[in-house]
Length: 389
Ligand SMILES: *Cc1c(COP(=O)(O)O)cnc(C)c1O
Image 1 (cartoon, rainbow, N blue to C red):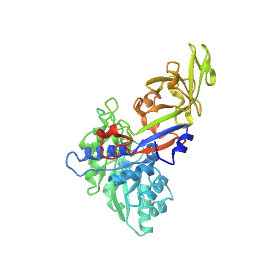
Image 2 (tube, rainbow, N blue to C red):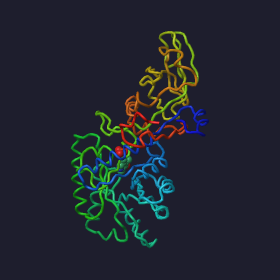
Image 3 (cartoon, rainbow, N blue to C red):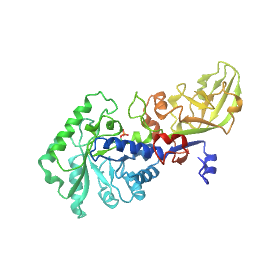
Image 4 (cartoon, helix red, strand yellow):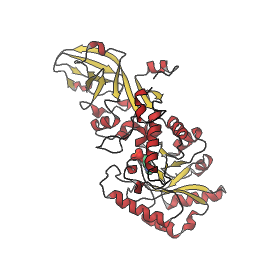
């Protein structure tokens, strides 16, 4: 957090989000190595949609490219265009597919549409003719998620009429898992067998099935290209088990003010919380506008100088109140920082408190935070953690 020149901006910010690029890189290496464990040449992509799950797609993309990552996925065309400015060379795949009239954008920025139905395939083939070049395409097969992708009928048409790919280069065949984090769910095996059947009928193209949790379902699910997002950013791909990934984000918010109140006083909008004893209240500089969800009230805590401190009163747009009655006054002063996310409370923990998942916590991370990029694990994986910058 000591980036010179950024110090003033950090002082002005209500909260500081620290993102460990070295940990993201180490997480990527770990997943890549899991793919290579059986000796097959499995490659590992990075999913950078939604601004790399809130961590910053441009910075993370550059860091992972330097680490050796050669395939990048985004959801929107504009995310792909922005990433192309940072990464001139590697394939960038657009998961949401080919929106009507966007073919020139895909061609200009050399983005690869993930084709989700025959109609998109027809349009892309026509574009290859119009632009007079062999265009890369991904075919996404729906194997059960029933969200995006070729239906079984569309897939059969493609199998019977391979000429529909004329003028295109099939860069990847992919599908997406319904419940990969639920290792005992039979749907995983059902999707695997549907995917295999399609892949056998369409030989020659590289294949991809596994998201973060899917990688942990084992080598049968790895195919040629792994597609992790969440696990890169430290989200636990194995819910209920110990998290094998390195933590990536920490979030600290400033204490703006502290005050003493009598017993039986209310705090915050609606008077929704009432003190049971004479209390000290701290007010900190983040709120629901920063992705600190309103439903966290009475369900979560923050950490301050070794103390676990409850969040009390309604969460405001820009402010959160905490009960610091049991914290020594010297440890709780305006200008001090409280830990919102970090070693004591991970995004997965906060997600439990908010009755959501860590994906939503991460992608809601506030735009008003000062972002400090550190590279604590740059020289090696977990055992260097003690030397984190
Ligand atoms: C988001 C996404 C991924 C990455 O999933 P994680 O669970 O975050 O690893 C992979 N593939 C597709 C199609 C996706 O939409």
